[in-house]
Amino acid sequence: MLHNLHISNVVLIQSLDLDFNAGLCALTGETGAGKSILLDSLSLAMGARSEARLVRKGTDTATVTATFDVTNNTPLISQLHEQGIDVSQDPQNMIIRRSVKSDGKSKAWLNDQPISIGLLKSIAPYLVEYHGQFETHGLRDPERHAAMLDAYAQIEGDKEVLRDYWREWRKAERTLKHAEKQAEEAKAEEEYLRACLEDLDKLAPEQGEEDTLTEMRQRLKNKEEIISALSGAQKYLTSDKGADNALVQTTRALDRAQDKIGEVVETMMEQLDNALENVRDVTHTIDGLIADITDEDISQEALDDRLYALRSEARKHGCMVDDLANKREEISEKISLIEHQEDTLSELNRNVANLKKSYIDQAEKIRAIRVKFGEQLDTLIMEELKPLKLDKARFVTQIAPLDEKEWSAEGTDRIQFLVATNPGAEPGPLGKIASGGEMARFMLALKVVLAEVGDANTLVFDEVDAGIGGATADAVGERLARLAEHKQIMVVTHAPQVAAKASHHWIVAKGGDKDVTTNVIPLTEKHARQEEIARMLAGAEITSEARAAANKLLEGRAA
Image (cartoon, rainbow, N blue to C red; front, side, top):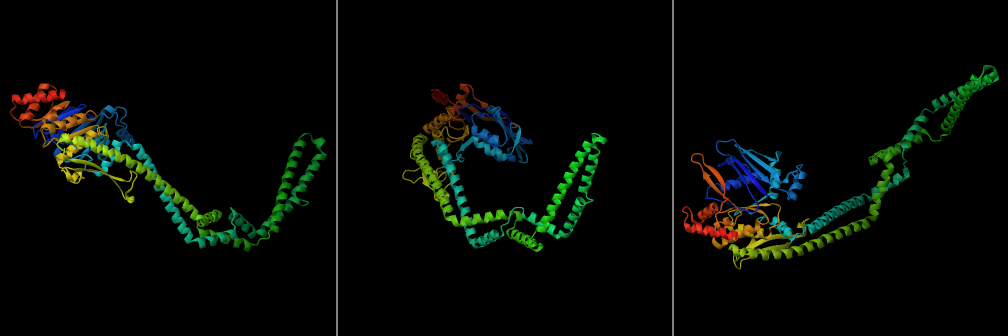
């Protein structure tokens, strides 16, 4: 709900601070007094296009500040939270400020935090709805009609189930198409794949084989040199003058003199035993290496051929030699897909068909609900139209099936509000059939029926009573008052019957001689309201009859 609007240097307004209340708020005043400036200012705060003409002559910057209570506006709070803006600390005072320079450039802030004009426009529908003779929020747009009907029918839960089926169905279709494409590609290269698999099976590559073969190749290449080095080392360890014999002789010599040398001999004897054991371990390893190299029955040529075959196969498949085993499994799986593709594709097709059926069943359930509530909506709106001088009009909620290619997550229906304003005429789109005044009254009737539908808690009606009077204007006022039981309603009106129904009343007037300004005066006293409504009834010269009629209108509101 809007509870304060501060305007500075906007056209004829030098500085204006307005506090608004819940209920029906009426703005009246003579033509040209500046009522449209107030609406332009509010629109500017809601992201409307900034124009240099809005800046008061002689000043550099026009500023509008709107303060809202968004305590129960969960969708708005959630959207702002997604943008990293937290208004939950003080939701009763969410402040939007918009400034326009004399060159037309503008900036916007939310709770003193700079925001983009795009973000401002995106949150505006959660705050204010504007309805005028030629600007009826959502009524000209058939895409909005479905949202209005569905909100009235309260089927968001059913629609969320439908959206889930839609997403799963589309996902299953994408999976099927991908599998069909893979199967088609695999079948086209089946002969090649089978030849590759045969080659890999013959080659039988093993993990780490390339490193092993490279090591063996290097060893064979230096076979004579390696054997010579190992044999020489073996000689130094095992000959009569070798390390083994020297350690044995040393041990014996110390053993013979052990009782004469003392306890230190035991330590030396232990160290010699360890050294002898290590020498014999090395000797054993050398013996094994010499035996391995001597016994290797693979030739240098055979090793080279094997390495060449492995590396050639890896190049063919664009992988490393160690990945050939995995490549073999990959090819085997592709061949398996070809061999079992009918079963796989059949299963995927069944899944798609089942999900499509679930989607259609849910869509038909939603259509039945829409038809039921559409008929209910038509009946209620027709009842509202009679007192609004549209008693010969017809309002029809058309629910027509869409072609399958037009189905969406929102359903399989095309929903459109149609009207006929003349008896016997076929209903047609609102924007083509209804005049501006009729459109505004259709919207008023729709809004009264859908009183609790919609996110915005502030609705602005601009001269929806234009061209009507008497009982019809009284009916408009009555419906605005009923709507104000659920929403904050701001109405700019020239109809005294409408103004008299308001809970709160302001008069917009021009002031000043040389420097003309627009002032907005709250009419808090009954006498002041009586005078303004009498002026609206009588014109420039207020008569006693006009005052009496005004008093009667006000008493009727109180009753």
